[in-house]
Amino acid sequence: MTLIKKVSLAEEVADTIRDKIKSHIYALSSKLPTEPELMKVFGVGRSSIREAIRILVNDGYLRVQQGVGTFVISSEGTESLGATFERGQFSELLEVRQLLETRIVEKAALNRTQDHLKTIRRALDLRIQKAAEEDLEACIDADIAFHQAVADACGNNILAELYGASSKYMCRVFGQRYTSTKVFAETHQAHEQLYMAIQQQDVVQSRHVLHGIIEAV
Image (cartoon, rainbow, N blue to C red; front, top):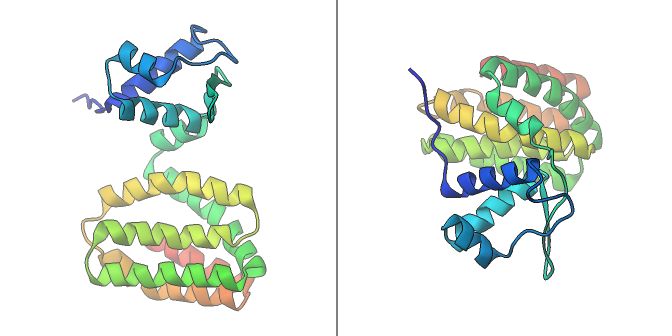
């Protein structure tokens, strides 16, 4: 059976504009038509055009200059990493997560500030609250926020960005994999231990606890 991925109007518009950029109909450094012109060309509303532009900005094809216009900045974009995550197997995502987070927690234990700890703590408290309420979607969001807060504390912006790029795919996989918040409740103590290890700047314990968390997923 072939699965057909449903796409929104905005994604259809983004795909068409991307094709025009790649075929040089919209040339490098050229200015895109205005929103009203694009709405007329594609027969869609303003919100769909704006979302399509946002997608292409995020993918590295366009740049918006407020008050000036939208310009083509690349015919290749920077979407390859996202596309790779999209195609990735769950086991591959876990391996990437382990590689990234092992270094992240080590550095977070060394570089965290009191503000970082407060942010991590808030996410952790929300995580267990939503697990208790059996609010799966909010619990997954809080879990991702917890680990992203740890990444933000590591002191390496590239590591934090890479983790952020992988997180939305992990979030999607969690939503497909779990039907309840049980696993999040069961791993709460381990997350508490990770928080304590980072707070105490214990690099070895941070790494050890993290590996246990990943194995439990």
